[in-house]
Length: 205
Length: 147
Image 1 (cartoon, each protein chain N blue to C red):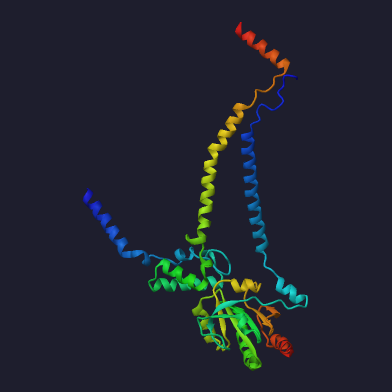
Image 2 (tube, rainbow over the protein chains, first blue to last red):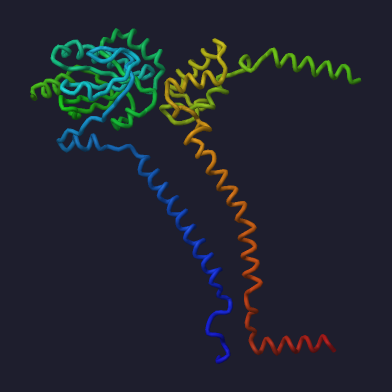
């Protein structure tokens, strides 16, 4: 026992240092992968913050969308130029996500047109956002249904994600202060679905 | 013997040159390069209403004589760069291509280093302690063999 060395003969400070560096690098790489997985998982599920706020009785702010104009009108810039949702602040906006390939959008297009005709003089703007669509198809759809309200265009799904929409059609009523007052997931099949909420929002100053 | 073979190869090459890449382009060839924006799957295996419209768009552009890249560019104009099935090999998107290659190369480079470290650890390790009875048995065996 007495002849046993005080320190482990296999111990080598350089090897220990290498082992420590290896451990630290391994831990950092593992932590990065875990963070990526967690971020990926968290972003997978659609957020429901807008609906949650509406259910709680508050009005969440509408996202600051800026998109090219597909068909102009209601004081928006000409087709092809960019327009921002914020430019319509002070007006009540009926924002409708649609696409030409979407069957329920065909059902609701005449309803939205009739709401637009009825409310356009009351500082209400019906504004379409054509998403995930071919622009020629979208213009054909607008001509086919004789739609006179303006539409913006978003080939990607950026505005759909910003509005936390799960598909098309979806409709939002945005008040004069740029806050979402109503969300209708699915087609607007009757004008009353919009006229009641619009009348209520219009009474606010 | 050789002349007919050469003639045949020449005819084949001429036929290929005449056919050209655009003439043989199919909807599927373009569709597998992009994804369906509503279902997030490659367009060639998507059958959603949006995907069907995109396939009609591709077929029309092929009929008009556009090549594959022109059609893909037109789809990017319509739907943004997110419509591409694979990230473009330029700018920041290059990271998606480079990182896996770098990781594989780093892994390959690490193999000899790790195996050398393992081998050294095995060599440097002290001989295992042997129990007195085993040592006695070993001595006995060696002595018997030596006789």
